[in-house]
Length: 355
Image (cartoon, rainbow, N blue to C red):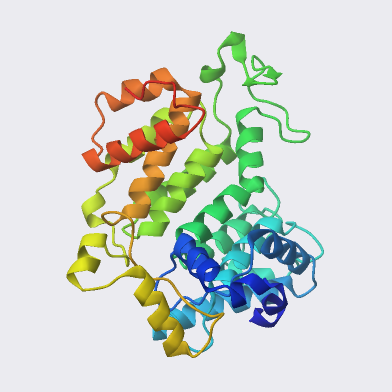
């Protein structure tokens, strides 16, 4: 794929400083078999923007999808599979591309869109290119296997947040609002001074339903994707109760994770540092290593921490509503403990009572 473009971006310190390299790998904590080159996020983002402007941008994304499909058949780390940085750049490209734009043309329909649905918004899609971008996103989400890949896509999906915001404020270009009582202010649509009672736009509802499908998933990073996207783009008075409802509907026992807990690792006689060294020796290389597959808590740890993070963010923005929810929530005790820890660590909430 694009490893030849990533190689020159690897910092020399990652290649030569073992302590730095192991620290970098531990933070990412990729699953075994997922190679890490060591490229930093700003360099990956700049590369993704450059690739998104190229005429062959769709071919590059198609190549990422094909490599991910190959991994599903033959296992992570197989020949022709993706390194960690490629999975990140894949998502960054989806966020950076213009729909429609010079890098998007008719052949997209052959791969990404159902018959009869053009990328310019037919079949009821009132936002140009939304069908295409959502389908590309769906395929990327199915390949997510790491918190950093997930969170960098979610935080970088500015297009998603803009669509939600415009839909909530009835602010699409040249669209006549069917709700003449709504007025648009800097804080949102306010009919008669009551923002919460302004009807939700169809695009926001469509995007929310897109996330709801992932809340119902049994895969760890699909559920985390929905959780972090909700926190990043739906954290408002209209959707906050719906986010809480989705949290209460989560069945953590049925969410599958490829990570193991520290207790399981100890029982197996594993230690994170030794695993990294063993992996490096097995590869015979010093700049292509993978993580340990050991989470910091009970799996699905990255869903538990994602929910806790979202609750701490809600506490900062809507303290009364968040505390009211927590008084009767169905969340497991370990998630509540993680939430309290996150709230106490954040400068925004360290002086706010979590309950």
